[in-house]
Length: 297
Image 1 (cartoon, rainbow, N blue to C red):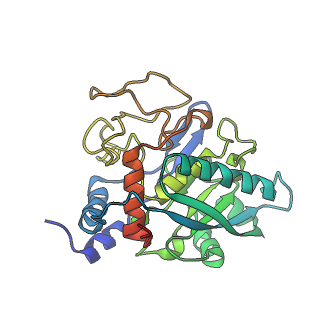
Image 2: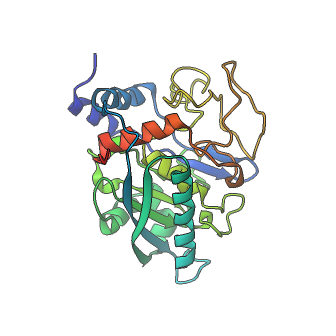
């Protein structure tokens, strides 16, 4: 039996964020886990409320509000120049338009805040709420991006997280928290190689638009991506765990298909990422319509 919308959204409010991390020597890793119950609540609500019409004509131009958080006024302190912002948005648009997602992103504003507390600790501390309360702009379909300097992995207490995003299903319960937080060093042309081609933002916006990781474990970290519904997308081959680097030919599950190492929702290096599947595109469109009120189809 499906949960009521209110009950389902209340359950989803406790869902943690998707936190890709950069651990030196191993590449990206994940600092958060969704339990089976929490993921099921989100999917039950989505199944009951997603649009039933053909979405092939879906198209939406979304506003982007970029909040530059820096320790000081230098590039080394996180005060990235406008050309890195616009180039990173060009990458974002290329990645989403090439997939046929119907999503495009237009820079609506850039603001700059010098605050060392927010720059170093905001994403995993009480400072985050203050930062977003002060800076967030727009509504459910407006993308707020916060570039910061260090994000602590909650599982280890150590820095290393590349970025994280709120899922669309969380917006109704906490709209002020909505958005993407990521390291300024991962912008296009940044110094965070091999994650400096802008694909961290592409990955995190994927979460913001409703996608899970390709290796999603529906048992909350106690199972394998080979089991269960995985990322709830049928045309992404099952994957036992995250791929690092660019492991061509990797095949970790007995089900058909090699691991989707080139998918933007895996953990491969930026240069290795180049695709969303048609199934992921369909899911993004439906998630954006269901939770963010985007219905231009």
